[in-house]
Length: 129
Image 1: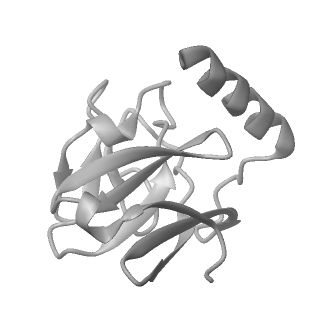
Image 2: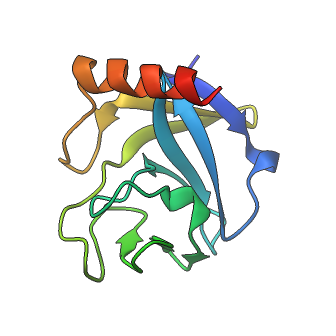
């Protein structure tokens, strides 16, 4: 079995769309780009506390609906202001149409969620339920 947590099935992801999932309470955007490739990145815009999964996906980028910053799905790098910091891009594996995300593997050098952040995310997630 691949590393990470099972978050969805491939068929749950439409082309040019994102799905918000929680991994250990931490919000992750799982995105299928226009080429059909699947990516996993931190779901919170680095500029403001806004869900990226609610934004538009075009080619290999996702746009934050709050202020219009776009992020490269492969690198997490912002492509337009007002965001200047990248969002984390996580390890992802697909096996038998199951999509697994490993938030302990950050592949772009952005800050990984530490224990304090995971605890805060879990508490926030429980509060939202």
